[in-house]
Image (cartoon, rainbow, N blue to C red):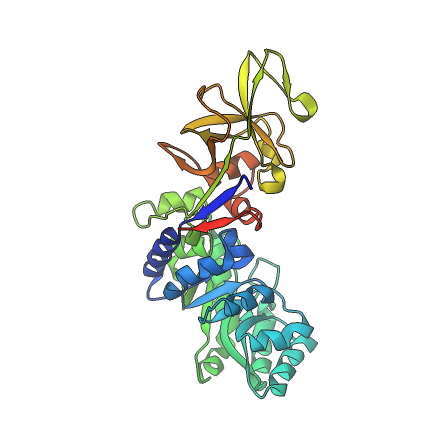
Length: 374
């Protein structure tokens, strides 16, 4: 396969330690959902487990894979778990997110009762993102109901912030206030449990820009991988935190073509050679994570030189202009994300060209592309 992704375990560990130190005395959990944001679920988790109080996944399958791979730290499944999968979730010793006030909560308790144990849960409160979570005005009553169910062990209470990447975000502070107000009526009951639940609302951006949101624990996702939640967070933290991008994506030229002036390139003939030129053919396209929005937009590196993309990105091929690198030849390495000499192409560059965010770029890199860990 003419594609490879290399992930630096040293960079992951460095980022994990720096983030842990940044948020102390709060504990830190790392989000490794969605194949660890494209970096590889198990390998990433094993590398950063020593720095983590908890690892956060989205679904049960990820939790099972981590347990089978040797992960022993606490796990939190943040997404929904099907009722008929609750037995497996409990056997995996993973906490689940709970925001139900009806039959599902009873099903969770029943599952634990059959196994003569308690089901670890983190209660989710909706404070304004309006996806999952208990309504703030219902949270206290729901938590009291959960506490009466001896089969439920409330290990945490959490929410998620909507606009923490913004430097001036009154909504962030409003969400924090909503969270605290929702918990106020049941604080004493929660603290009277054998173990006080962990409160968490901040992800990477909030942990950086809004220290008051760190509470007992922070959930760090994108920053673990050496990527910034937004340009504003990077600017604000430039003297306090250095992150190391962990992922490198490479391919090779599989052909070099000579075109005459006026020759068209690619589907739709959207690019015509302005003069005689050489183009390189890459054996990867939008099926391999290169957005079609890169058509006639963006550039990759050959021998340390930026070579612009020309024509439309195809399903399995992309063409680049080799004018600025006349010595380029078939089988030369092409750096899609990463450094080559003094030049670099970053996930943020990709996000700009694709009109999206760096999160989407790395998480959509296909899992079948081989990952090498160094």
